[in-house]
Image (cartoon, rainbow, N blue to C red; front, top):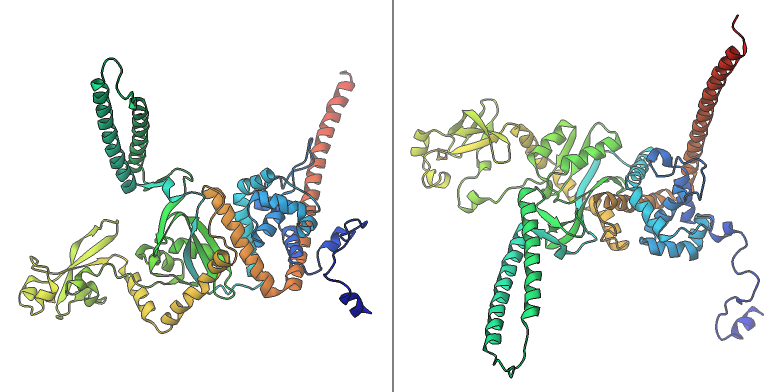
Length: 542
Ligand code: SF4
């Protein structure tokens, strides 16, 4: 019977549009029992939005149209970023036609301005929500808290490369404009001369290009003035670049890639490749090692932490700060430009330090003693100078490989905290360091690979640090959220969130009861005062 029905049709046939009902009658039936959208619902219900700082979260009943509940807008954004729908206009459309979103928002249909406004106004709260999810990962035991890797990834900003200027670029632009102005000046002169040569009876060719050239000249001069003003701003400030479209975006380079945008710093835990700390910056990776490792250590609330980073993070001040904070950093040693080695001369690493006598020993076995005076180098580091003896160097057979053409002695400079670098060198030479460094990229590339290649998130939609940081928080939160759902499974994750949500409800109820009690106490005090005043007026003085 079934076969005959199947074979009697040419194609599969859909439902008739004239039937009374197409979708299930209950909105609840729009999504299945294990649909991830239910996990989003559970997660947002478990958040204390007022505590996280979401706008309107503390709002009581008021006059006029009530705003959208921030919980609903957060659910909309989480759904959107998990499903690669980011723009406010697309989210508006999806809220009207996507059954999962209709279920999630209970058929609310916020406009695109409201949706965009939520992301702009709540950037700090989104950051806090992202951090609170990391704390939840800790509670769930999904982070190891012993080994993390840090790295930066470049994301395009909402600005073009042409809208960002460096000093060199501005200088070239001014030179080009100078040349164009000079050329147009010559054109004007030629034009004037041609006009002067035309016969007085008007029998010439009648060309009158001077007006156009004059307008063009004015425009070029105005552009040159703007470029000069920008250059002055760069020379007097400490920005290094001027960005016209997004004032915080910068031209950033890594390898052979140059972008106009931001550098996203992420710290990833080794256990499940979850992001435990992140920040959006507009500089290179250098100088961010301690800041990021410390943020991860504080969030993980551990006493000691191992952090892995690539050579771009090598910085002596950072290594010292990490050591001071109980963070063991594994960073390949940056060898500098190896100028002396290229010249065939002994480099600093050929001189060994003897801590017991506070001396350096040169390749010829002679000692270099510290001079009394220490000084700060160009970057402000205080260093001690160790000097060889002239007599030893004069008689040394290796003199040509050691000293400069005019030098009579050799100096080696030691940073006042060089012991930190000695310990770091020993750590990097230790057994197991090589294996750790091989694991580094596998740990830290996981989130960036997932976000950039799978989700296609290579750029930010918004402008300025605050909003960009809010958008990154959404990306990081959605990465962690999806990953936890995969690791734990829907049932375990939602059961945990439901338990947490009941705690939030109880504390909200307790807070509400406390505020009612406070209002009642004030009301009672006022009533008593009023009663006393009224009674004293009513009793005539005797
Ligand atoms: S030149 Fe002086 S410092 Fe250099 S190896 Fe010879 S003795 Fe040592």
